[in-house]
Image 1 (cartoon, rainbow, N blue to C red):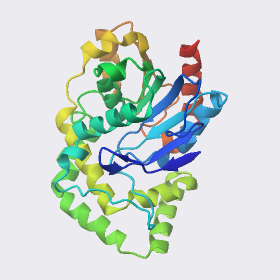
Image 2: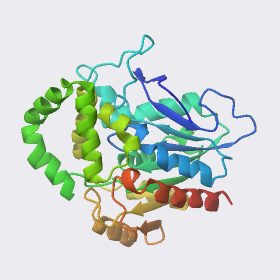
Image 3: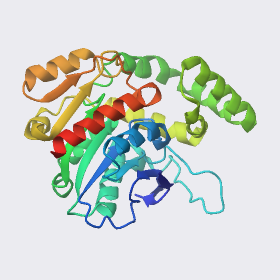
Length: 308
């Protein structure tokens, strides 16, 4: 695995790769796997999932993941590049700006003759669907895999109600809390997060990513994007799904607070022959935390199937 923070759309962005690095020549390799994260968009949470995908593909295809702009800052070092603040740069960190961020990455780093197996998790699936409307990007996409996809009516979901009606009105209180938390010594913050992971059953190898997640500058941008999602992710884009149904696989959860099961059933009513599947294994929306390997095996098998 390789990682760095190249500047994309003016923002140092965390990129992880298995196989070829983004700036290496792909040579005769004409396919890659690209994953767009959900929100929070920290690639560190996707390491187990994507390393499993890479192993399932017999390490033949490069696997890349791009985080959301501003959601993951590099550790302090003399070479750390400054991340533009949220204030005054809202157009970079909102939903439209995050989509443009992915477009710029693909245009810069994916050769025009290379096909993309595009994985989108949560809001990453929404962005992947939007990418299919961009001609020079769409022609590179061989197949899409939408995992627990937030493609519609986010504010109308159970979690959407909690976020918009209960948490957002008191957001200033939460801001005070996580800013105070950030003032604690690092070893104290580490132990608190570690204790939370133990109680919640989250693997400890995500500890470093969890500490990065609690950066107030990062949380501000995560929340800003979340609220923009509530405003703009409304009606399902049936037209784009229908036009591209031959190269889209959707995977819905049965216990997903962001995507009710009824969204799956309504999709199947509107597009009966679309390849949509309902999870029978009770994976959570944030599958990367507890079911990463299992989901990685499934996605690896799907990619092998659609390559054949």
